[in-house]
Image (cartoon, rainbow, N blue to C red; front, side, top):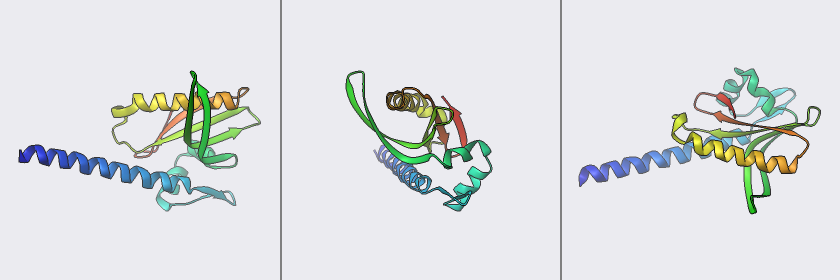
Length: 147
């Protein structure tokens, strides 16, 4: 009985930590912005992004954080919030990024892929003449996965 209770409490603690960590990371990511050509925000996050030139474009001009979107998908009203979106009108491309703080990429990846694909479907309705690219940004190691 004690072992079962310990396992349940450990699982609860891990879940609470993951939720709090994810919420805090999203808050910090939302606060990032470009000022005078330099990325400004949480120092460690800015440092990690600056080390990866492929990420910088997602935080510059035309980028938006926590973008609310809605559409009818398969006859159902869907309302979501995209972590980061960049609209490139010149090249007619929209890039959408969903942040994930999981350290085990495989654990929920299939769920996350479906989530990003839903975002892509919504954005295609809003920007029908644009190409839409979806990504997962794994925040534990700062890798960008294009879907």
